[in-house]
Length: 252
Length: 252
DNA sequence: AACTCAAGTTGACATGCATCAAGCGTCAAT
DNA sequence: ATTGACGCTTGATGCATGTCAACTTGAGTT
Image 1 (cartoon, protein in one colour):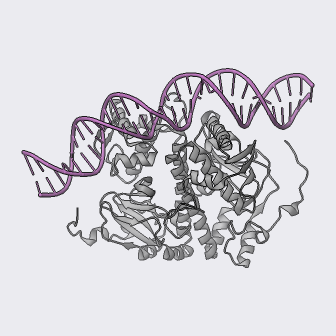
Image 2 (image 1 turned 120 degrees about the vertical axis):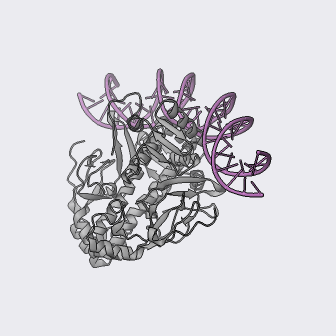
């Protein structure tokens, strides 16, 4: 895959104020004039394609990136080609937060499908945040949310078995896609079985077997990357923290 | 253990500017007058004892907490008494960052030994940070650092075996203690084997067997909670790269 | 000193998942 | 259509680690 047809810039030069993601993204809760100010520092590049990197481990940190359309994976490249997938990022989600500390990226970010990305130069952003309390607060919230999600993931990897992990992965995808206005029960996975396995701490073969089993049990219908969820609440139950269960629930 | 002798308030009423932890903690990089301002919003309570809670899951979020002396664990209490230990916190480390997002604590924090804790009312802190750019930046760095550490932990739980996990735990403790001016090779663990196991995603028995094995292999000398590291570099090697193919190592 | 209880250790056994290996469907290039 | 590469699936096997159970040790209490 080399060059695509030229895509009209109008389709990606959408300002934050018109962006359908603003409720999920940095502009959340900002006054209209502040959204304009934020908008003015954001760079929008032409679409990236499958395999393109947003950044690689070791590079100097300059900007945060927000997925606008498409999807991105972050991963820690290890010696001899192996990699640990750290996360999958959907529209509205911010990438690169872990690099603020050392001013250097510790992981790499690669797009999984043709995607539009907003780039947020961090230094200018920081200046702006100091001037706009609600933006600063929103940024704290986003960083905090990331930490909370990592804790959920720690729990998943520390205590859950293979079945629970895949169920949690699928219900998480379902809920995130649904927040973006897509079907919670019918979607395409942009990542390979191998990447899912890496993310969940499982071997590819285990992931594959579980997809088969979930299908046999009538929970899913699967065709390659296309997933139809037939019994969402059973999956949520299996994942461990179902909305049905009485007192303790955790969601985002 | 009920009540201790009264401890002189002078011993805990130490201002940030005189605190030996200031290089690890929020005041890092602040001008002296800004340290004073930060200091003025921080509350210092009398020492807490083993088993006391800083907060519990579900409580409203009001403050961040910084360990001054002693140690604290955070954990996600699950139904039927089980718990997942999320982290151990040493002097200078900040607790509660994950609660900013939902303004509500998702996990609980319990002190492991008699400890002094600084409380940082978050709303006042946020106001202060807006006025002090270097404090705001330091806060971003701390949040980001937490995210980076969680990623390391994800990698540990996702890809490492029991031996590598315990080695990573021990070398991490060693390096953190050493940054606080304590011996990197001779220390007391304030947490139980069970808590270590929960944190590392291992059964207590596995942890116990590994301590025995490390001792047999001449890596450690262990007596209950007292650990002497006899071969730190071997442990570091073990924690980083698989024992067999020892050609490359990764560290931070 | 004797008692109690929790924490830790050790051994025997069971099992979930990784690993190894082979085969199959899909897609792109020719 | 043919080829090759790759991703996915499926089966067979082994091992690391969890589980269960018994015992030991240490610390606090009386």
